[in-house]
Length: 102
Image (cartoon, rainbow, N blue to C red; front, side, top):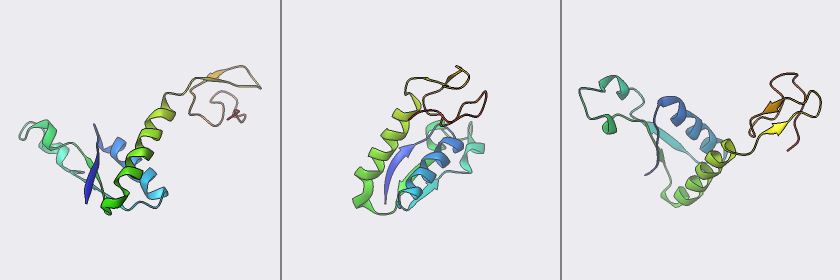
C-alpha cells in the first residue's frame, strides 16, 4: 500500500477516495477518526490519509488527484440562459438550473 494523499479534513479525504474508487482504484482512508486527538497528538499525525491498495496504481491515482484539484480552479462559466456567473466545475447553473457548456 502507498499513501497518495494527505487531506486537511475528512470531507476532503472522502472526496479523493470516492474519485479513486470511481476509477476502479481500491483505496482506504486512515486516521478517519483520529481528528479528535488533535492537541493530544501532533496535528500532522491525525490528518486523514488516502492510501491505494495496489502500489502499481500510485501514479494513476496521483494523476487523478491532480486533475481533481485542477478542475476546481477552472475559469468561471456564464449561464447561456440567465447570464449568471458559475464556478468552472459546475455542470448546471446555480441560479436557474440550466445546463452549462463544457
